[in-house]
Image 1 (cartoon, rainbow, N blue to C red):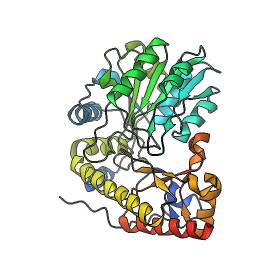
Image 2 (spheres, one colour):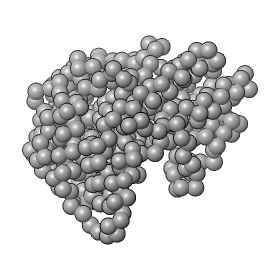
Image 3 (cartoon, rainbow, N blue to C red):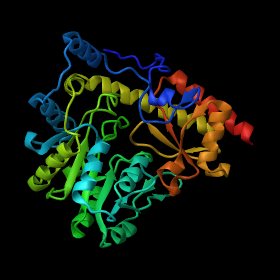
Image 4 (tube, rainbow, N blue to C red):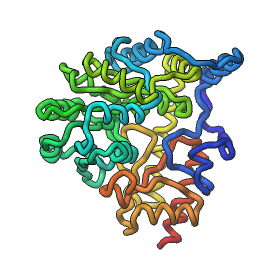
Amino acid sequence: MLYDFDTIIERKGTDSLKWDKFDTQLPMWVADMDFQVAPEIIDALSARVAHGVFGYAVVPDEYYESYIQWWNTRHNLKMKKEELLFSVGVMPSISSMIREFTKENDSILIQTPVYHIFFKVIKDNNRNVLENELIYDGNSYSIDFDDLEEKLSQETTTMMLLCNPHNPVGRIWTGEELAKIDCLCKKYNVLLISDEIHCDLVNPNEHYIAFENVIDNKDNVITCLAPTKTFNIAGIQSSVVHISNKELYEKMKSRLVLDDSSQINVFSIVATITAFNECEEWLNQLNEYIYQNKLIVDEFLKKELPVIKLVASQATYLLWLDCNELKINSREFNDYLNNNMGLLLSPGIQFGECGDNFLRLNVACPKTMLLDGLRRLKEGVDNLH
């Protein structure tokens, strides 16, 4: 079956965070897709709606089995039902982990530039943000392992949040890089939390490596997984945490109950099971479509707007644009584009100070919408000069 990613779906006036929160004509910022979800999911949800009763639900075995089957067959990660816990979302899970496994004023390490909610969840829980800045060589990013070890060795560092694949720089971390991170975290007794929510959104012929697949002893690792980014169902809250360490599992189980994050809803059950069991071909076609969009951006910038450079991307549908040559900070530039061109992206400063002079562009949209955004970007830069 050939799926449709070209049709523009009207989203204004639907209480969309992306389209209705800000006054803008073309939002290309927050990480949700402007595609309808797979028709298999729509059909399954429609059938559930037809039942007409939406009371409290329990997590069925089939829900966990859909995760187990998906990660086993697609990513060669072996998981057991008794190692999985439902949570309403990855960030609520991480917030619960911070409260359960660290103390106030502890330091939590993140690799910047990185997803801006990492900063928020650490600060909101009265912990300290400790940055291991990634190394940018003008084309792509790598890890500064000397700095990473120095930061992990600090007595107050008790947790590390890993983004794998990385948002916003688009890196898929290699097995060697992940193994080195694991070695350092074990050496300094730092709990490693791996956020792998973007793991299925990779370029064709690229392969994400699950952090747990490169290590033998998983006692100090918790992995966060979800179908929400992959299948564009973020509004239907659904995720799991995978914990092999039984002691950590029991503590996290109690914490999720305490934080009211363990109660599933009837629609997340149906959407998740259907996504993992029936929608792999939809995902394969989606990844090809997004990859073609990335090529369009790369070619457009090189030919029409060489003052902005595309950072090499292996994963996610979020592109990291190097705007250093424009000599304007990212927030001012983004506001200018919105106010003058009706184009709203994400300013790089949100992802850490080292992200200033960059913009993040969401390309999970029909090609006509993408080309409109690129036209607005070029016209804005031309007018700026």
